[in-house]
Length: 119
Image (cartoon, rainbow, N blue to C red; front, side):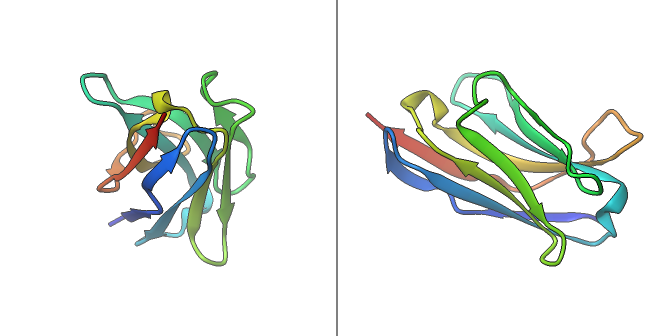
C-alpha cells in the first residue's frame, strides 16, 4: 500500500519561496508517476506538476511554469516541489499523489499541506 506524507507548507510573503516534500513508501516506484495538486478554498482540485519516477520527465500547469520545479530523489523516495515567486493566488492545500504509469487515475494521495501566501 502506497503511503505519501507531505511536509514543508507554511506562510510566506508574496515573492517568496517554499519547498514541499512528499515522502513515499510502500512500493517500488520505478513505474510510477508522481504528481502535485492543489485546492484553494471554493475551487476544484487542480494539477500543478508531475514527474515520472523512472525517467524523470516532467509536466507543469501553465500557471506555475517557470516558477515551480518538481524533482525526485530516488535514494530518499521523496518528491519535491520547489515553489518560487509565490503569489497570493498560489494559496491552497497542496497534495502529493501517485499512480502507476499505465493508469489514468491517481490512486494514492497524501493528507495535504497548507501553503498560504500573504500580499
